[in-house]
Image 1: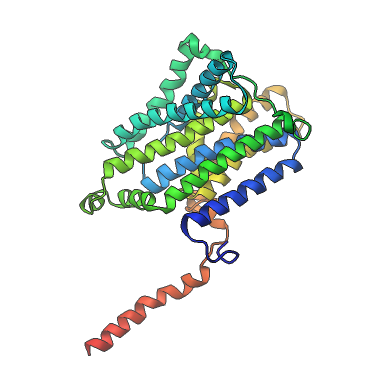
Image 2: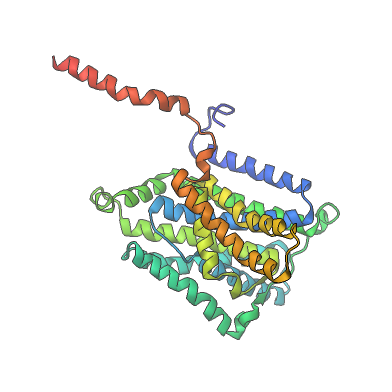
Amino acid sequence: MNRVLPSLRGNSRIILFGAILTVLAIAATFALDPYRNFQFATIAAYFCVAAGLTLLIGQSGQLSLGHAALMASGGYGYALTANALAAADIGGLPRFLIALLAAMLVAGVLGLLLGLAAARLHGPYLAGITLALVVAVPAVAATFKALGGDQGLPSPYQGVPDPLRSLLATEQWHAWVAVLVAGVLVTWLAVLREGSFGLRMRAVRDDETAARLNGIPAGRVKVSAFIVSAVSAGAGGALLCFITQSVSPGAYTLPFSLLLVVAVVLGGLGSIGGAALGSVLVVMLPWLITWGTSQFSLSADLTQRLTGNLPVLVFGALLTVTILVRPGGLVDLLPKRGTRNATVSPQQPKRKQRSRDISAT
């Protein structure tokens, strides 16, 4: 990107790069059938969650095992708001945007509460709080009839707008919306990551005491990181509700929350590109395993057991191999810019030391 437009720096380069990738992703939907567009939209929804989670863990050093609960809060916030707007005869783009903002607000408030706890807790204690949250939220949602109970809550159908109805199928339109929301949200996260907020998060992660001595409010940084990550998870939950037209507590269980953590570790902690790779794995790997087992003449009982347990085994094996062989995640397999400069830079300190020795003599 720097070679094409060398004058672009900082946020302008990030925004342009994000816009180009978003346009390319939207163009790719024309080459996909309806089911693949549904999968593509689901990947975009998970990408929002994974990008926020990798920012929280990789940049600020705070472990969250409860992001599925934040997704659920976003999904329920979207469904409740969209249903209320539909009853008021408000539809189309205004209904979607208002419901999306409501979902992000609900998840952000929950993230604020977690962030306040994170400012006082560390390590396993923080992980325990988020673990309790992901167990409690589905149970609470299943208890209240206003939230649909165990069956969940439906959301209004969002069809293709009239000007595009002859051009797009419903699944492709859903993919467009999911890609656009993910593109805007992840670009915003990338700007935060590369700016002063990202520097403060990394300072708190590396040495909280030193960060405080240098005037960085560590507690405020931790709370802000949780809010940003929660807003991203809420947007992902809202998109998933928009795509499937429903939200239910059974979709946001503890295994799914742990799977999100595994996805960002496999992709590469702290890397937005790694979050994209992890999102693809979460959606496509179980489907590939199910498709592979269907090619064999297995009994119905064995097929059901493999479908439920084999993806978990494969994810566990991939996580173990990745940590042992490539701790930086799958993103480390991609070519990096500045490799040539990296080979020259180790010699520079030696030259500086040599000049100091000469001046000393």
